[in-house]
Image 1 (tube, rainbow, N blue to C red):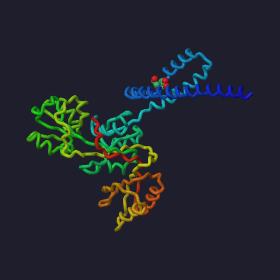
Image 2: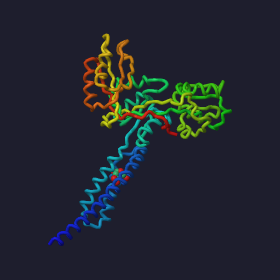
Image 3: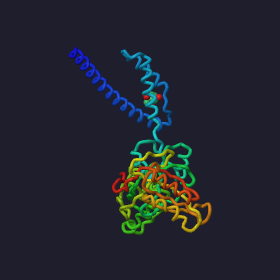
Image 4: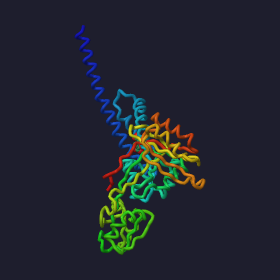
Length: 371
Ligand SMILES: C=C(O[C@@H]1C=C(C(=O)O)C=C[C@H]1O)C(=O)O
């Protein structure tokens, strides 16, 4: 009796091992299929086509009905593949990510790095447009510069946080490295150097030493400069290496910035809230009342809770002269009780307090410049 029972058990477990192995293959194949679907989604997005293609789905089901050798019924095949196709359609909605254009700008490079080159990257003409696209839900994310290690805060970005309701979803420290680019790559033919004023300022020492007497001209962005130079054999641009690839330019000199640790901190903004990772930052903005010690009182709960404040910046409110918004970053996530309670204790000392979001802390960049 026991021998028969054991035989049954052995057959059962061997059949189940077969099913386990098939399930692993099915899962592997479904993931492969979803991956292909994702790529198809990017092409559709480029073409401006919608995700659903009913004709293709109908033909696909008809083909499978012909291929089906049973015992699966036609209804079952239809049911299973409808589930799979729905999941494939779901995954095709690529993230739409706005960046401050033109392409090859440092914000573009930061956006590519932040989202691992995956998604649909959409150029915008201004930082305000990036915020607006999030608010209008035309884009899921936007990437904006917030602070540079040499120049300090990007005030325009900070001001927009008071106007728009968006959450910070990530931060990224991007090393900014400039190259001198021209059509021929020949330094002797350069008569004018174009770039964004900040990039020219960041390379001032190098330009003075290596290009004395050569005229510099300010344009709206480093990539605009690269585009201009693509039509001007006597021009050169101070821009990214990526711009050289895109605009067909040669590198005259590489890494010409005066300070090697020129790093910009970028934020990704979106509508969603991020879950805690264990190494997070929280950003808030607040305005204190116009009484002596107001800022001290607003910040006291932070000190008492032992929270590590990593940044405090002030900006005029522009509603009333000499009144200010404070932008504060500190370690921790709003889902931590300590963080939540501290912010609650700050509120009575503030005229206004807005949570800008909790997000994974980025690594201050050393060598992640994208070539
Ligand atoms: C993958 C595609 O997108 C959608 C999903 C399909 C699928 O999962 O097979 C088929 C057609 C589309 O509705 C495609 O167009 O090929």
